[in-house]
Image (cartoon, rainbow, N blue to C red; front, side, top):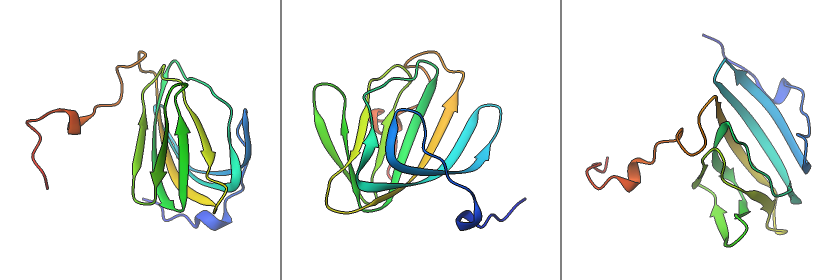
Length: 126
């Protein structure tokens, strides 16, 4: 077990991203967790990951996500789930920075990785 001071970790700007600073907390064979700070006018170009699912959890601020058709707001306390193969572009809202956790899985066939329990009407509320 490890307790990690995230503020002490170095940061990087992922490929195809701008004004976004990622600090990788943990990585294993199939899962990566990073703490991300996106400036108000930061974000990413439209892209896909054929073998990776993403789950974004917004801790502070808000972000916008565009799938090529619809743009949606992802406010603080909300999660965004992007399955492998789904096009996505995340950007700041221009109002405030956005801080979020990004959990990335790998090795999944496109569209088969992330389970969406909220789509299963049999799931019970907490």
